[in-house]
Image (cartoon, rainbow, N blue to C red; front, side, top):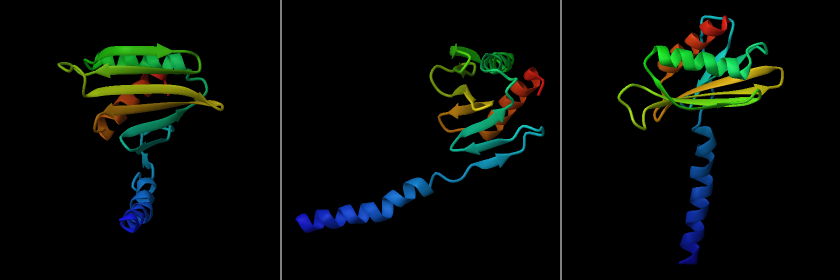
Length: 137
């Protein structure tokens, strides 16, 4: 009995565990049609914006973009270093929802857009485009 458990542990360790990291995949570059580079991985669109696009401004632009499309803002919090906004489309209670997060990284700011629960690359890219337009980037 112990030998079977031991064999099962080795089987899991050598077959399932290596797949966990490998199955996540590599970030896919996304063409924003601008000088801003973005990647999409695991349902999350990520872009690095210039330093002059401050975290509060990014979240304000995201709020304006989402409200103009009929989304309601469920929660929002921001400091100069990081912030997050959660919005829901019309006629929605919990899911789907869009989470926009911004944080200061080195000499730039990173913004991530996640359409939960399953991810939507095109919607996320469209939201990013609206944010960039409102920021003048």
